[in-house]
Length: 403
Image: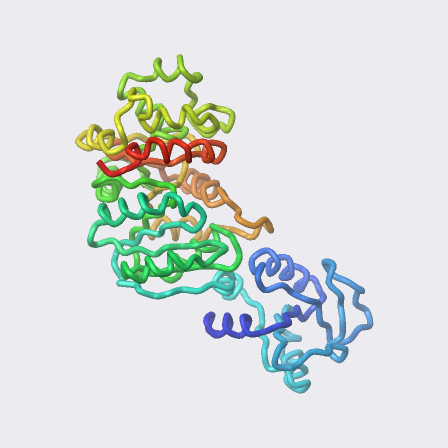
């Protein structure tokens, strides 16, 4: 069955049921609940009540004959062995039900495409695409989008992704710029990226950027150049390339060392430690964040910092978990990684799950995470710093403006 036709049937069905109470049905029920949160299943249907449990997974088990809903409002996931499928389909149609689908591997692999979403399609079918995850930090958009507009290469198209909401300002802005816009009902950053990758199957190079990343001149081009260069020079396969980020558990040490500022930082805050540690001041302290943004004058402002590093042609291999706020990866690596992020933890938002999977798969697939040290972008703040950094943003706005 065509996945788009199936999604339309699901979206227009008020009542969704699982048909089948056996082991096959139980296994599929768990996956459907995890992966299709906006299409909740109301009950489990069986052909005969006898011999079946009262409930499965908290859902009532009932015979088809006992169902009392409008025929045109019901949809059935058929989850039984192949030998019983024809009989069940005949029973459904004889009872007046016409909306159903037999669960199979093909459908299960593309479940994310059945989630409720809206895609405003302005694809240019370019070789490179940038996915911008946005929708929750509107106070940053003026600067973030201004930088993106100015520093976006002509051969890179853009799709804005809003997970769990639809923002009218973003809708209008995307229309003005000729960019695509994808929004989902359920908030899952892994799911929305899976959906976006499905729509952009033509793209061979994928940039992913968060709405609190401040892009700098030449960064996107430099990341691609470094990806290709490392792939040619080093005896390894490249998984992901990221720029240096001052407010980052890996990048801050590289930047401090290159500027001879490690001792200054450690005297003022704490001993540097590579990797993600929420208790470290680089992730938790407002003054540390402001320091890395250049608020004290010890470090150059963002754009000057990027210019200082721009001609180095240096890179490093990150050996710890890295933030994926701004990354580049290839379609080849995405396919090797499995072709989709696993999702469906049952928790809204699943923030960071894409990072966990990407970093893990880079290692498990024997690829490397490369940091392009000839480009620097800004990261506004880590979560505990955000409220305090808003004050710096208001009182020291020149730190965030394009220079």
